[in-house]
Amino acid sequence: MSTVELNHLSAAAPQIPALKHATIDGMGAYHALVAEAERDHEAFWARLAREHLEWRRPFTKVLNDANAPFYQWFEDGELNASYNCLDRNLANGLADKTAIVFEADDGKVTRVTYQELYHRVCRLANALRARGVKKGDRVVIYMPMSVEGVAAMLACARIGAPHSVVFGGFSAKSLHERMVDVGAVAVMTADEQVRAGKTLPLKTIVDEALAMGGAEAVKTVVIYRRTGGRIPWIAGRDAWLHELERNQPDTCEPEWVGAEHPLFVLYTSGSTGAPKGVQHSTGGYLLWAALTMKWTFDIKPADVFWCTADIGWITGHTYICYGPTAVGATQVASSTPRRPPSGLSSRPPTLMALCIRAAST
Image (tube, rainbow, N blue to C red; front, side, top):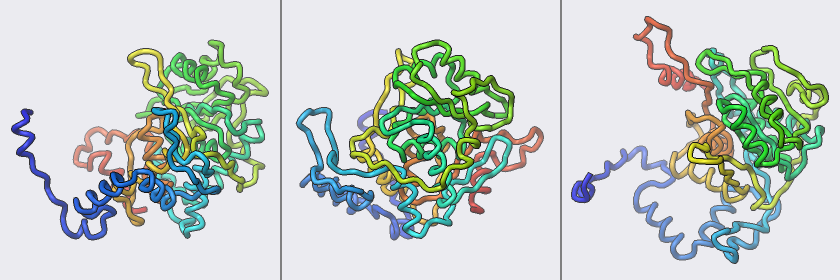
């Protein structure tokens, strides 16, 4: 497209009823935000951080640029991502609101409220602590799309253990590279995962990756029973998720961490070389996740949000795990949208059908 053509593009204005309740209700509001940031960017981000996040210890320094480009934001403040995504919603009267509508590969739908998700996360966080996982330890999550996968991420955040999610379709070699590089002390996985009707032996792949050497720091492998398929077992190291959680309290005091404490490390695909780990800090990342839910998606209390990504990607981190829960939204998540049965082409497309089912939440 030429420059001349670009200059003649026009924007379609949204309908007035939609504008009336929008978070940013037009270009005037947008330009006002831009102007505020240009006048004093530190004051701008300080205001937003205080309005949209809850701090255990309020920050007094907004930006430390002494070691640019390694900027530090809100560095003397303390918070916890899991607390902001769960406890705060309970305190705001959203305990009975649906947090996640999950549709599995076989069409089974699970609905989990914020209260239920909170208890799941707390039991898992307590279980990880009981296995010796502590603040600063790295945990690799190699799980299928599931409520348990989201709970695993939030449980790690709750105890201050940075997680590194590896997409559940990656090979043993790809998993091994990431476990070794991040210095994992624990791995969370499933017996198998099911995608588009096919099973993938996740636990067996974990065993193959650990057998390659270099990840001897891994002392715990937690397995979510997804299919009930037979799996190899190493006594003392391997543990079923449901058994670890069984006798754990359903409340868990969060580990308060500095705003620059790593929340997670996510690796590039490795298609152009060795995978590169990108570390995301707690305060700045969580603020941006919450703001984009409000600014970009204009999320409202009655909305049902759906991100079609996997938790193995940054979009899944931000718009399945942290973004929706940070703003108290109801979201849809799915394993793999199913193909409609053959000969039933008159049915709505599968993605549309999933949206229709979710709308009944």
